[in-house]
Length: 452
Image 1 (cartoon, rainbow, N blue to C red):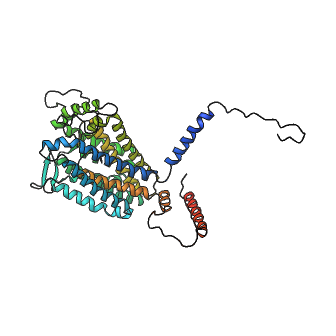
Image 2: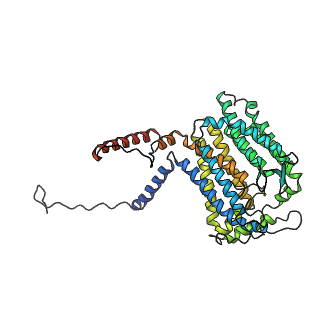
Image 3: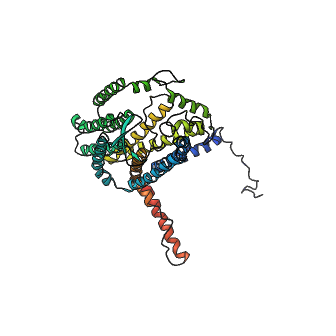
């Protein structure tokens, strides 16, 4: 044992014991710090939107195949008939999503007026005899031949988001939003025109979604509380009149919270069997494809009430997963709208987020018996190509906006392609300094991007 300068052996000092609780808290604190750092990265919104939308779409395809087999067989069709149509729509929608995610913001703004004009024209064609057709009592469809149909009102949502965002952004640039007439005109009249064309066909559910988009744009534009309340009161009064004058809508309103079928016009059969499907699923469900309610007991099992079949086959775990994916998508959309400096991006991202989350809440609320059945599909999840195509294009908008953030642009620019990378000549020793120089440039770019 080595001795000290005095010749005495060194004294072994005992280590001080750590205060109680610190050793146990440190791993949790480190995990929390890592999660916070990962959550605050520039590409977090990009990955949440891309990954969340893809997972919802893929899970929706699986559930459409499971929930639509019995309906297809009852109609003397192949069991995979509805799945094939949905898969084709998903492929086309994927191409639209990719195209929208790669378009510059100027091109999105340039498309606003053509999309609005096409939506208004096609929604007017629905009311022309011989062109428009009725489905489940709503005249909002145009036949494309064979089994293919299109619902123009679904594209009206996308048109209102793009056109309204461009209109409000231009007025903000000219500092006109301080005047109430510029806040409302022509945004509210054009929105009421779209609502009128939709209500001519009797589609109350789509009209509610369009109204939610309008209020979302006004709220993002900073409408005063008095003005916001006035528009909300007028829309609420019109909604009450439309509900009171329709026995079908009154019957749907009477089915809120129903747990047993009733006699009369408001039999609540669909609402009650949706609750039965959710209740019989338990924690992990009865298994994929093992639903009982889809055997003719639950109407529209693969469209409006696909969430109920999901709860029956995948249980509470499956439904909570769907809710978590929509929550992540909504958070990412709000984050994109809140971090951008471009007014158009802020309004368009906020409008798309309002559209997706409001429609998901209305659909899921109806399945849970908390809201009246409005007949709106679950975005990216329910069967229906007319709803899937504009929704995937709108998700592509969010992806493009998330990629356009300054920090995200810098993070994406630092990436190197995995394939087709040019190899420099020379020995290994000559290539090492270049690699370290590249790493230094990446580190400086990451610091300048604002990543924490």
